[in-house]
Image 1: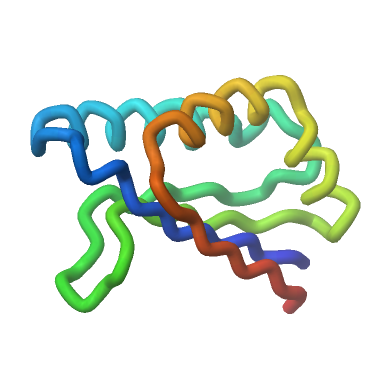
Image 2: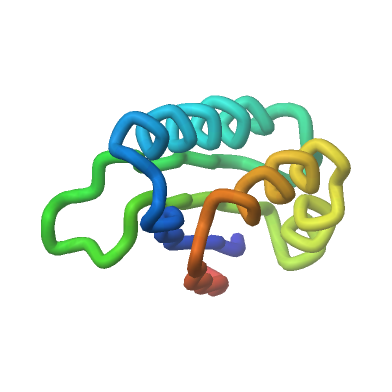
Length: 99
């Protein structure tokens, strides 16, 4: 199994309302991918991390294996959401690991 974890910070120029709307859109669209992309087992988006967190928006996902992660990364449904995400964030951190 491969786990894929992302942390994003939204652009600082967004108002609190704009941030909330953008995070809700990301959560809805990414979580809807479960069952639509082969090998994607779990996907959860956290929009309200606890205060000790260094990011605004977090993604936790699990894949059958490395190949499934590769399929996800180029799948048109994911690419569409990722394109939107790139337009609203100022930085991104990623960790992928096998369990």
